[in-house]
Length: 157
Length: 157
DNA sequence: TATTGTTATACTCTATAACTATA
DNA sequence: TATAGTTATAGAGTATAACAATA
Image 1 (cartoon, rainbow over the protein chains, first blue to last red):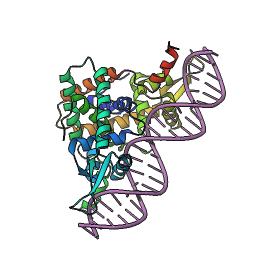
Image 2: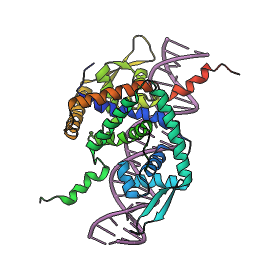
Image 3: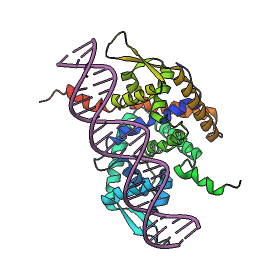
Image 4: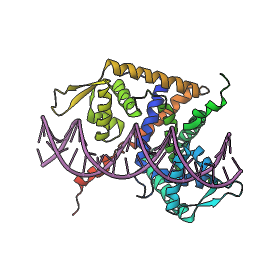
């Protein structure tokens, strides 16, 4: 009933885009939930890394990341090698099976997006990607712990 | 490690934007979860409507919508009036209290977005909104039941 | 018989907190 | 003492299925 400010409109879109994501998720293999694909995709994109970095890239708590990684590791989609620099950490690396399933998911999603967005110009998709990248950057650290950790740095009292 | 197609990149963003949405959600009053705000926002934007239409706009199953509406109704944020045209339905309408809390949430989110996106040009935000609107349109009905319902229309066998 | 809406149940994702093992 | 990671528990969101009431 009411026209909204660009900010309010954006806020509405942010919630609604989840529905589009669910559409993509429904095409996933049964034992490969969205959390796993996010992990595999990041390992595929950035290569070997530690859990803490993965959690940071996912903008999700480490405990959540740990569960996703455990699931993927349980299926043999990634390997955990000891970190020579820190005995507490392990380096996560995509396995051949993980690379395979990642390729399969990527192909399926590309197909689906290409068909749904058939009337889009590629430059428009790139434009959207650019804006979304910038949006994520602008929000920087909106991670769960990002708020509470500040208590250590307080200088008053 | 690998450069990806625009489609693969978009798929990645769709998942990651959820983190931004969570950032917004954290600023909500304790008894007002994201599901409620989505309901209130749509009633505020489109005015009185039935549950089935609301579910359609949310791109979520009616059972889910029913729960969100029940929560909001329990707090007195919306009223359910009998539908003169169909005894099975009720018309959902924002109450004064609902209007109030919606205004409060809108203001809070606008503030947060304005501060995070301080270095954005308004025209860029509008551009992003335009593209997101189009994205949602392009995906049209990716609702849960949209797939299964097809079984009624099969012509083989 | 089909449709609107509700409820029960199950699954995914996330966060907090308590715990371990290294640093 | 602080940090990397794990696990247990709790809460929100969603989907399926079974059901009630009305069309």
